[in-house]
Length: 609
Figure 1: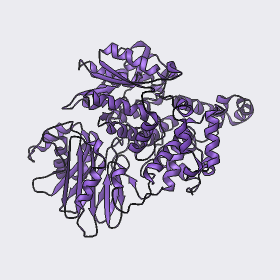
Figure 2: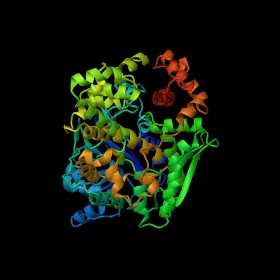
Figure 3: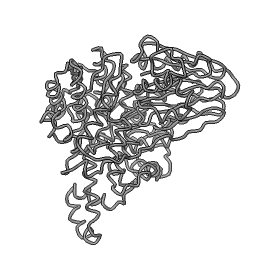
């Protein structure tokens, strides 16, 4: 796991080696073990390394013996030993690293190499003979890749803060990125919140020479499967075992939920003394916010792990931590779970465990959120004749939950219905709130619609799962996990996001995933003997910090400072004040909206100065 950056001059000028070094040095947390730079003519590539595989000889940038190809790579290739067996008869290896298999694999197969890779990656490979930089991001977007594309220069990095070292890059807000952020709480690729900075979408490659061409190389192709518990168990176990390749200690995030418990149980079975890590909160409602921590202890005892915990209590300087997280994210992600995620990764690093496996992605594969079950009710209700729904509507609106069902049932399966499950601020609300110009009102709907519309499954819940995988997982969950774990110099691996497992799960009918109207029923039943009973039968409870309490208490002064009218450059002060005052006074619940606004304010103070 590493940080990469680079410059390609298109105007005939030599690339600035010192500038590449400066970009590289903007992200030392991504690679505390080594750093390097390669410069030759129009290109300069930089790299910082977190050593996981081949600790002694896997340094980067790495070049072929003839100097034609040079690569900088961030990630892990889990099948690199299989690739090596194919390549060794033709190419001489000088290291035991997965980086060298990428280098030789590209020599052999060119861009078709991507079809053979199993892992998480973002890399840039310079072909001196063609004068072209070939870049790629993994299928599920576990690793970030940001870039700036101009007629005279192309430059890229793992983090935007490295791009900002480039002279003359304006620090301005992208109106389309702002609209997407206010709607979704994150900014999906190819947009960012920075005007002129783009993010390579997951499952895409980019070739930069005199011009730039971006192409998609993968999409979810549902596998025809027999949805048995035995098949689910075998596929999940295979994905977990792949991710144990490492020359340093490996542990797990253990939240107390089904997914992380499954991963932990599978790893612990063959690795006595496995280290596990959890977070908890000092809260006036400790039972509510520490339910996960209690169950994590149950799982740790069941599997005999070496368990460690971090508590977000009064000893933690919460305002300073929130500011640090805002800096590390590069652009805001409106999710307070960033805070405990970072603290758990930091604890693991302090305990000498620089690689952690997580349960991320299982909910989007096996229907683990309430919205999927609730949307199935919407579909059922839509099958009621229209005249009957019209008669029932006034009575349904008398109940909050039934009223929501009635409103959603009026929407055809598509982007509008998807957004009812995800939208922080609706289109009209964004325009009332924003003091900056935004795109035309249907912009967000059109962006989401392009993804929702790609999956034509008659079951809209399958389309929800697909869209969450392509948008939320790639650009919210994975980016949040990458930035927070790398801030602590820790590599996180997500077995449930193995692309083979993703395609397997996509082939399972939705009704099988929630049989008996139980969320994630097939997955939990496949591991009923592994899961402690308390965890197997638990209802869904997200990992939610007591952020509402924080806004009313320890973070209240920071929020009031950030929401002062003179600091609200992009929002109307009266609108923000009403949201904040109503939430603090408990007249309304606005946590997702306020966390989005607070994150933006901290970001613009840090990055738009």
